Image (cartoon, rainbow, N blue to C red; front, side):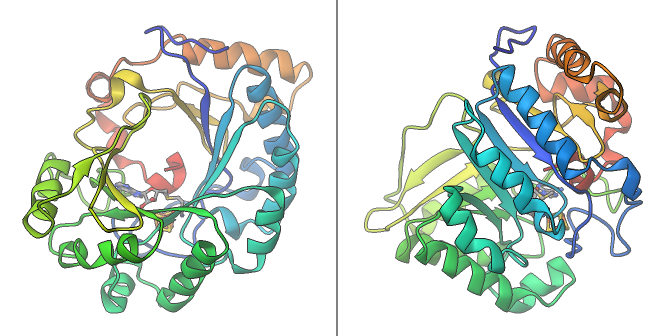
Amino acid sequence: MLIDNHNREINYLRLAVTDRCNLRCNYCMPAEGINFAKNDTLFTIDELARLSTILVSQGVDKLRITGGEPFVRKDLMVLLRHLAGLDGLEDISITTNATLIGPYIDELKILGIKNMNVSLDAIDKATFERITRRNQYDTVHNNLLRLISEGFNVRINFIALEGQNTQDIIPILDLAKHYDVSVRYLEEMPFNGGSKTFESIAWDYKRILEYIREVYPDYYKLESPATSTSMNYKIPGFKGTFGVIPSFSRTFCGSCNRLRISATGDVITCLYAKASTNLRDILRQPNSEENIKKEILKAVGSRSKTGFEAQEKYADVFSNSMTSIGG
Ligand code: SAM
Ligand code: SF4
């Protein structure tokens, strides 16, 4: 079991499989993209499988595949097949933009990988295409509906962006009205590859909740697991639910149970911190298993208590992009 220096159990790994993406969401990276990692600096699929096995042997029982866009990796299913058969791993989830997932939906279902977070920052096509700078709305929408009808546990990630998509905050809730999905509103974070800097946000979780309350005054709070980053709510008569994730306000740090490993091997113990170590070369050397375990223990043993504490230490962290951190 991994216990951090603040006595929190770390059992949740967010593993980025690439930093590349076929979209260019304007809150995530500049139009021209970022300085993407060179191919030989990215883990191979075999290395990602080995790394996951080591982390699971150390007590990780929940693993989220993220990126970049995970499905730009053509060999992603090889990793997912490995993870699906890994003893001790109870929960496998994927965060995706749902542009490329179509051909893999049947096999994902067979593998029992049912937890899908789909990023969808607009229900209006033009707004979606303005934000993502690509014309993939119809594909995303079709794949989303397919995932829902095939019985996946779908959560929709919607970042509330001042001047861009807040007119869709209420309309996107129609998805939760008609389907058993969770629409989760995220606060924007300043990890956008240097596109813009900010020290406060117009739409924090409180404002989002008040705004929804004006239209749906009867919504009520649901119980959530202690380690959940979202606060979740139900509107009477709706099949699904909605939630808010205070990713900028950081109200959930106290119970943080997560560790991130980037596609190039950086170990990130807090979104607002710099990488504490890099595992890629260690994994490529002899005695890798033992040495990786030691590095993980060291990283977990020196975590910041909160994102605010981490931010104090690492002032330049905001030049990062979520696509390379592994959102
Ligand atoms: N490409 C996949 C996707 O978009 O779902 C996975 C990677 S993406 C970096 C993971 C999550 O990070 C997405 O839900 C995305 O909306 C979120 N994200 C990216 N940049 C962000 C930012 N600046 N603030 C808050 N969330 C962000
Ligand atoms: Fe790509 Fe996801 Fe970043 Fe959008 S949020 S550019 S889909 S990595």
